[in-house]
Image (cartoon, rainbow, N blue to C red; front, side, top):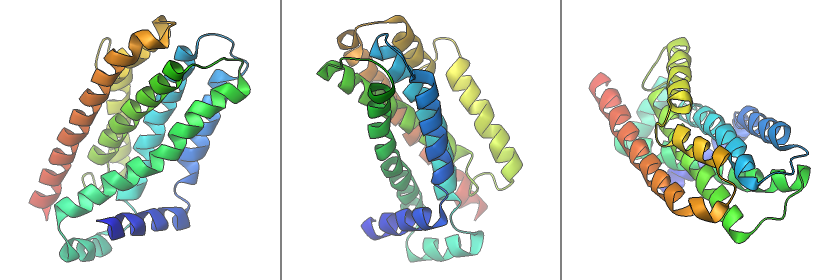
Length: 217
């Protein structure tokens, strides 16, 4: 598994497919938190929303690194489950630098005095959105939806539902709480629960993707 993840990370970097989601994430966080002097909870919401988009994009990019023939060779060397796990791990590892960036940028472009609770909440919020974005990216990825246009439409529909569905966990509920609460310490426990929900959502998405790919092949 380590060799597979290392291979896919290297391929992702060499292909430069990481650059577009990286630039999207950096631009959104910078614009949305620039000159901000309010509570960091709102900035964490902006970073979380940007992470949701970037994680979805990164996951579809990782899943689509190989064409069908090359993917068949990798599957023959392991299994569909192993290849899927490698995609998930690679996408999540690619999101970790973005998490650090999402914590640092609001402090650099705004005026804040962060506490440990602020930083922990920011990490929880971004990881929740990273897991959710990875789930969306898996379902809309080329191995699952081979028509790129349909995959894009499916990803957009899922992202809109998760973001705009009132009270829908984990994303809409998370963003609503971050926008309406000023004290990070009050949200740590509830955000940890949403992080667990996002992990379960990713597990369900992986199971669905595995079922579709194995039945098709």
